[in-house]
Image (cartoon, rainbow, N blue to C red; front, side, top):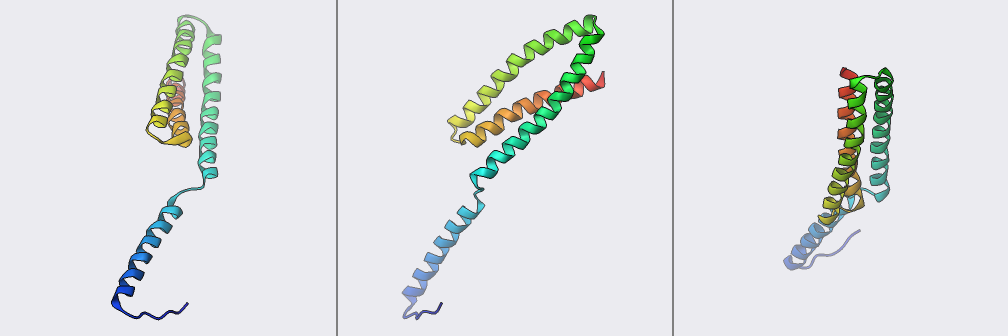
Length: 127
């Protein structure tokens, strides 16, 4: 592409247009396609499901053993489900109110569940 520059005002105009175009192009390049945002959420939920499967197996073994430890585990299991759900809903709602959209809400809610499931997995595997 060739063009003729006649004076310095045209040079300044071309440079400012290039800078604007460059900024706009960088903005669009840095944004990820919406499909990839959802795939990250799917993989995050898959990891939570994998950890939850291990937690269920360890809890079943503990409940099968019976006794006071099993009774305490049943009470804890029921109580923490409601707390985790409430905390995840509040986290997702706050992200939506701040303008993060569906992807931000999904990430924040799944982070709450992931923390809870990982904590249960660590706790149950220690004892």
